[in-house]
Length: 388
Figure: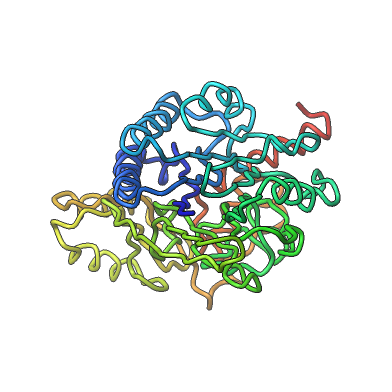
């Protein structure tokens, strides 16, 4: 069985307020080209199709147009889409019956009772156990063993078995921990690899944006990562994975296909930070004809000049790059003097402002994604307290 594994498209995601629909369109067209060339038996999209549970009409239209493009180019390929933590499972499920008639399986919700809703047979090629995002506490004990036993009973020809999941598996490596801890990453508890049981040949994972195998999986569990950098801190290659499995029990052969962005994300300086004058000099020397989104990491004693962004935009006026963010990094030597907040200041600040202040003080880019999740957490707390 040959599959193309992709994940975390985050359609509708912005970059510091800048829309990126054009970037997404070009990336999805690249994926369609790869599908046309590779002709996989199945395309697996393992969650976070959209950036928010209620995506815009244009984001939904782009998703539909992409499915149509894939089906027209390689109609014999089966497409299987599972919901991620950023998606509305109910929204995907609403079109499940209709899309199944066209070779597309949408699995938005985790079904505790009917495991058959998660089993997709690729005739003559293998089986896919399609599992969307689900809270660990909502997974009944032995559920994975049960669904894999059901597949084994159907698999009379010893065909390959692939399972999907959208979650954090303990021990994954992160390029930028940001709002993560060893236990929780992006608001999702890390599951031990052993939870998924045995009986599958490959576990196609979504949620972590950095491509990697899961340690201890014997190269049978992997995050393919996102095909397009969502934030400036994702400083690693992006693309999709081609997985080929000869027969049941074989170790999968995984081949990476990189996708070059039309507008790369560039940070000046590439590592660390520099004072304002030095950063402006780097921006002045940036190639005029190079298309890119640019973030400036500026070392400050207290705060950036109020006209900093206007100045940067004037410097880049005749260039092809777009300056979209200036990240103020406080000098470590002055952290105690300027980096702290008094009790009085703390009491007057909104929670979101405190979060931004903290992120800025430790040199982390407080992305749109982080802001959305922090807003959702605040809303949930307020609802629990009866404030809304």
